[in-house]
Amino acid sequence: MLSQIKDLAANLAPRLIEIRRHLHSHPELSGQEYQTAAYVSGVVSSCGLYVQELVGKTGVVAELRGTGEDLRMLAIRTDMDALPIQERTGLEFASRQQGIMHACGHDVHTTVGLGTAMVLAQLGIRFPGTIRFLFQPAEETAQGAGWMIRDGVMEGVSSIFGVHTFPTIPGGSVGIRYGALTAAADDLELIITGESGHGARPHEAIDAIWIASQIITTLQQAISRTQNPLRPVVLTIGQIQGGRAPNVIADQVRMLGTVRSLHPETSANLPAWIEQIVANICQSYGAKYTLNYRRGVPSVQNDPALTQIVESAASEAWGGDRIQILLEPSLGAEDFSLYLQHAPGTMFRLGVAWSDKPNYPLHHPQFHVDETAIITGVVTMAYAAYKYWQQ
Ligand code: NI
Image (cartoon, rainbow, N blue to C red; front, side):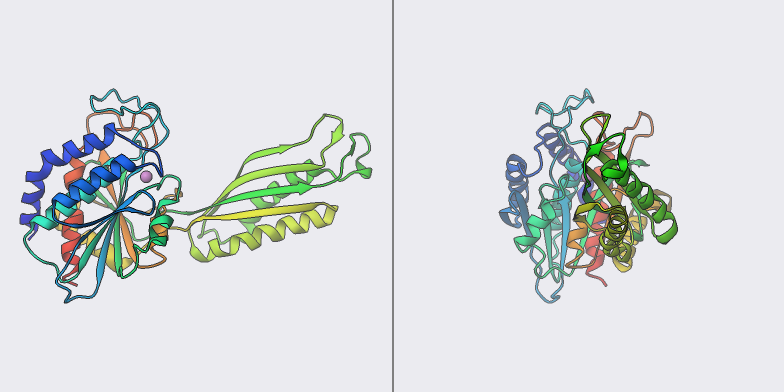
């Protein structure tokens, strides 16, 4: 079966590169993926899949229906949106949209999703259960997975696979991570309200700037003394505003920040932990506060058994030396985690680094991928899907 999958993928390679270059030159921003969705829908329809458009606003769902003897359903998720970045790669298929670029590899992910659908449809076997392909919009704004889930895409899904390009792994290699892959990312807004007064008479005022500084310092120290060091937390106050004049004590300070964590239990406790510190300091000095803690996406936690399926599919297909077991997670965020609240899943990293050209990070205006990775991604995903039904 592996050699059939590899042959089909190799035959499709020119078409897949054409698809990827088309997507790359026609990027669309999060939530506006209308042309991309229509294009994706056309490709999957022509493979004979059952297709639904405008799911989760601009998403596409395509199903390769099984015989029904296995009631499980496998979802394969890829994302389709681009970023507000002006491309500077100089490629002949560079973005034709001013200020919009596929700088996170979502054009590659969409192509891997399409290629996997094509290969599995052409394989000439009916799987015992259904494979549902999710082409998701708006991953960059962490909204698309939620939109798709609200429209019911996880109903009936037993397991889900995902993929993301990775520019520090060589093209043709696959990164496998057991456990936490990405961090939970939450937003924080904190407003401290004191009382204004003369800069020379602090005892008659409540200095919101000084109290804000106490809060920032205490939070950073408290992470080191009260959080489990094996369960990392990063708290960054990235924006702060307050005060009106050098000799006037500020009555209000507003701070905005991001909070990252890896362990679900730690993530769950963070809002209360932060609020307690803020409340204690404000109470000590007579200030008031408003804390708005907005939950972003949770941490992606790769399921061990499903990760094992992807790892063994990849190592059978490519040999162990092209598999990297990733020892560290990333503190970036991925809304793939929202699907994992409905079914276990795993996301693998697809190496896209060139061996003979400079490489640039994700979200860089010169980010460009080694396209041989597309076949690596398609074969790995298709063979992992095949192996899923053997379990
Ligand atoms: Ni991305």
